[in-house]
Image 1 (cartoon, one colour):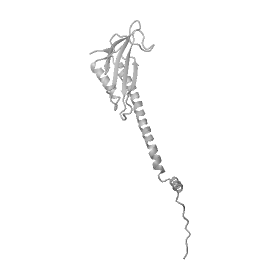
Image 2 (cartoon, rainbow, N blue to C red):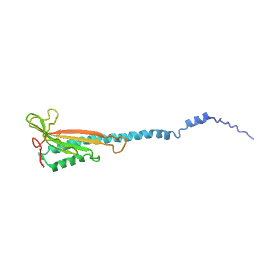
Image 3 (cartoon, one colour):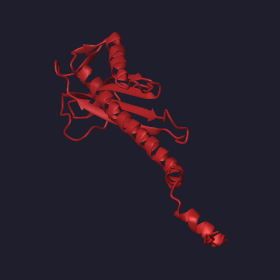
Image 4 (cartoon, one colour):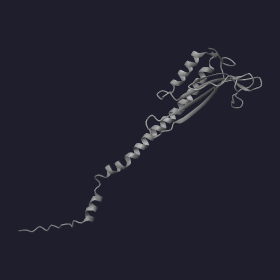
Length: 188
């Protein structure tokens, strides 16, 4: 009878470790388990950054839209201002309009070139006081001219994550000259 010469490999701890390290069967799963949390952080971070940039852009659009709507009129009344605030606020959709403030002010430079508030209306904010002095950029007005001055603020809060607990405040200011009159008048 023939004898088979079987060589037996020693079963030592280093040999098992060596075989385990050479086996790549579960390597992809381990790498994925290590990288997945980082991928989630990047994904939600990119989403949050995009939402914040969108909110900032829309706040600018709200300010310039409100200024443009008022500057196109020769006079505005309460219903007109309600429409301006509603149309401007609609630009934030689908973001919440609750933290939005809009203040529209007509500023007229008197004969001495001092900028005074002719009228002011506010949405979720107090209007400026009539005849109060307003500081505007140099050269924007001259004696006898006027400008529509719109101030918008928006407190952005993350809709997805509670890890961003503080709101991010966006502010925008818009200045437009009236188009149909020297100054836009305000009626009731």
